[in-house]
Amino acid sequence: MATVQGVLGPIDTADLGFTLMHEHVLVMNWSMRQALPGWLERDELVAHAVGEAKAAKERGVQTLVDLTPVNLGRDVEILREVAEKSGIQIIAATGFYWTEEPWYQGWDVDHLVEFLLPEITTNVQGTASQVGIIKAATDEPGVTELNRKLLQVAARLHRATGVPISTHTHVHSGTGRRQQEVFAAEGVDLTRVVIGHCGDTEDIAHLEEILEDGSTIGMDRFGLDFLLPMEQRVSTIAELCKRGWAEQIVLSHDAACHIDWFPKEAIAEAAPRWTFRHIPDDVLPALRDAGVTEEHIQTMIVGNPRRIFEHQGAY
Ligand SMILES: [Zn+2]
Image (cartoon, rainbow, N blue to C red; front, side, top):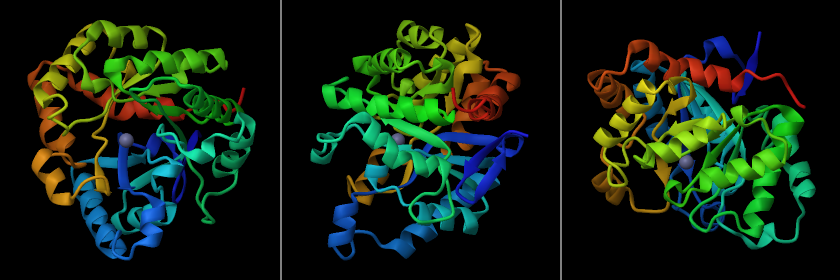
């Protein structure tokens, strides 16, 4: 039996079911949260997240992969509480975000690996939980000297443990390709890597370059229609399925039950469907209308997540 570490313990990969591969319960600056009373209304957030997770569960979603990295306010205690109260399975992540912070500078790759490794092998944040995936991120500035270091941290954690890598990219700058280059140079098997935020483009030729190197692509920002409307996201996936790539595509929203980057009202206005419900409610029917077969849909929402988490251990 292959297992993946969920926040409430190991999950048989056969029980992952319909899995949203890139979501967030909470994205928040820890310093602001710690310093300013009221920056996070914890009980309110937990109640809201439990409601959203239950709504997703009622629609068939069995597992959420929470890809919040360490320095975007990842809080495993909150993830455990939401998993317990909603009954949904949650997998947490380790790894760092791309925004450059002063403390990145003085540490070499292997020291940073030493800090994060126990989150995979022992426990995380003083809880009984372990993380099940490694997050890496590269945005518009590309693979800077510091970013290369962070990508190498992810690669070495992966090689030491076999736990898959999933990334944030800026697809219009081609940073997914650059990530693949760094990972390949570190000896990573690219079939164990999800290159994220690929759904923000309709550039099939670019996506096929990423796919040809073996990685899975995350079509994972459904609901952010102001970046690219759902219809175009759907037709890109339909075309890729027609070309035979269904086995390397996963679906998600990159939605957050709470994110402190903008006021709640602004998010609700700019992206009203940006919740864990949009894919079951709107996207899957649209994919069917666009001619994507039921078999390909099941591959993208169940089969591929299972394959990504079934690994042979370290190498
Ligand atoms: Zn994200």
